[in-house]
Length: 219
Length: 351
View (cartoon, helix red, strand yellow):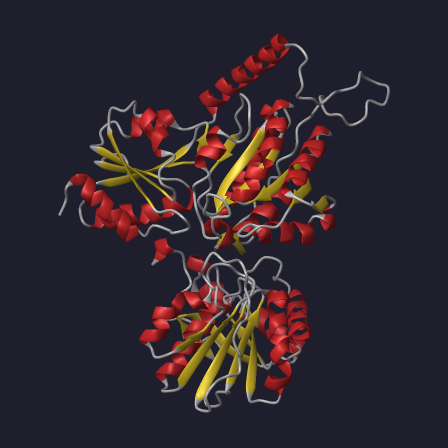
């Protein structure tokens, strides 16, 4: 965690766990004493988004910027803020929702971002339907790069089966993640998995997470 | 097949393709759109037809046309779109055609909102179009059950030659859960009534809902109601959870039942004998199951994401002999387990 970039963009196939990783990453950075800004940059999903965690962010001194109508009944996912309007000492995490179509809006800021100090992390989940072949995941990675006009800098293996995730579930995704890293020529930045699941020794760059994105009956 | 993590809407679409749905006609609306999107991506590749119609009304009438030829056809929408489809659904029922209709419910009335709701219970079970008819209504409460119920809905629609609806909601449509697709594919049965070309080998089949003579129409409707009686005797289904010794029993369906199950667990942890009955079929309504399971209960609490629609059917099921109270949130607000627990305590006069 030495080299945290000014801007961290989180992308991926929808349902891979981008939002949950973003929330965990924001909390992690905030705990190291950094001033963190989280941008809910989801123009695709009506529910289960970063803006859901406004109170959690406030309690941890994290600033949230989100589309004006996020979590309302207005079905217009407009980005009405300047993504890059952050202070010099602030760290920005951008949660880009939903596939390559969600990444289109990011393209508007690509020319400013590419000259800046940024990371773009591609979150993967082996257990998502139609993503079981690393080549399918690579196609999505490329589609997101084309839509956003930005290049990824690393992979986050967030493979999980929701509430049914076990240490075995995570361990059985290592080869998949490795294969995608080779195909894309990108480093595996983190293996994100639930804390205390018992993979500390096996996982490369283990990043323990909590599950924040869940339905009301599991809270 | 190993488990996969899927969003309710896409799991539903994949399950429909796997059980032989050959035609999907839709029109986008939140929170249902992923279903159409998935069909657009996958239906053609699997040998079927995906068509985004110019409106919901066009889509349901395309379903009528496709179902007439005997193929498995489906449409999906969310609340306001279902209202638009109701005329076509009545025509499909009046023509004795099987099809599957998906309603991923959102807040209403009117344009309402895009957050989850269950305020279309009355529409689905009692008024999905004009005339004397019913549609089968199934209510899943997990992504896995969405998968299982789609193929069951197609099977029952074919068997009884009538429309079947899956009454989902925005929460079930948008949430992610692990699923397994059953290996056994359900297959469409023989449909000798289909208008699919007589090849000069039989007399031609006519698909129609118009009857010139009033008595002919009456006879047709009466015959259809005999079929409905058979369905009412065989299909009602519900899950019961901790009802055996329960003093306070909740009735809830769909995503709300998940909230209520958590509330029952919270109540049990405090020593309160609570239980849950979750109707899986809303028409036919599982009246007998509710009546039997609540025999020894002190009171019943019906919980819905509406101002109270299924509650009337629960009262009828227990023949108004039990105290049936209601708790609901509406307009897209989801009740919490803590709120439901508070209502159980209120029901029992527990501090």
